[in-house]
Image (cartoon, rainbow, N blue to C red; front, side, top):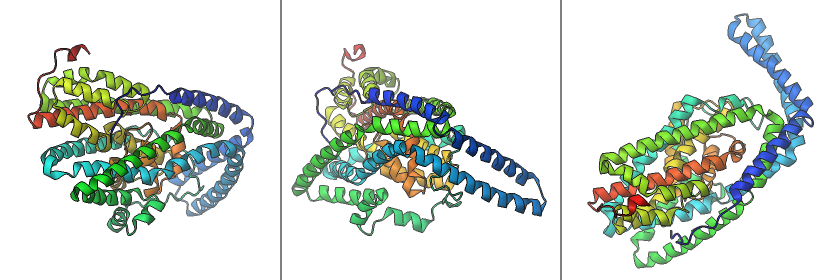
Length: 470
């Protein structure tokens, strides 16, 4: 997909989101202490009874006492559910703002995945001219993707940032709906292969859309000159969808305000402690990912990996400040050529990286998806988590490096694994802060990938004299 060479216009969206975040927190605090104070006190009192009953159940061997406690728990759960429903109805005008935004995000899932992936695969599919380079590029992309996803999964299991949330499931049911053994092979295959692409798109079955897109993209490239018309059309449609995404994201401040007001009203300011921990742990994860990417790159290009980071530091800062790795694309391409990468390699690897190699975004996907599951007390076995990792490995390949596009993939993944999609509201308020870090990481990952493939192709020359001074 072409990227305009003109500098991106400065957007105030992040500022507006931060303002909405602060205002939402302030209003939520007021509502928590006044408007829904009685409901919160009643729910807290019932929760203490349930916790005490759970402790007794773990220690007692008296069958009669156990039966009585279980019946009492059912009664208390019903009371808590009724009170929570009354509280939720009071704050519904705020939470509905976030719900509308989430519906709009889900609206663009199918067309965004289909168009961006078809264009990327079609360009890669010209094996007569780029088969060898494409193979080496995909080898690196797959390795980096798996490392990023696996790192996110490992860290979120170590830190367990969502446990402190202790949120009830939206349907107020104690049954999480998650199989203890994970998805069966039959269920997984049915999630992968569509019986109807129209049905897959109508239901936002993102994995099935990816499979169809892969076939469509390869076939488009295989028919030669005629296929270029399709590619140009898909490229134009992809730009339209990305424009729509921009329009939807303009509503993010309103959604953030509503989400934070509702969450703080119900949970209190104590939930912000968990948020701060989540942000700190995520940025620690990004630091580890940077280290691993640079170490892997140094195996191929040696000590020049340090000069590479110095060379591309400007687009890294640009991506961080604009929360868009795509905004940094033109400058990254220019500086990689100054670093010594041949233009034919840069023009092939870098664009593909923006569809196939978003390392920061992929680490965030496993981190965020499992954080949401933890927040609702959903225990996902390792087998299920590995299934989720494989799903994300495929679905992440259809998303461009635009602000907060990771929410699109996460929304589809949550639905696949029966995790409440409403959990996305937990991340809306802090997503801009997280997006800055993962966008910068995407630039680092794609820069390293381009330099490595250039070295493998013996197409990495000396840096221009002024590169180190940039």
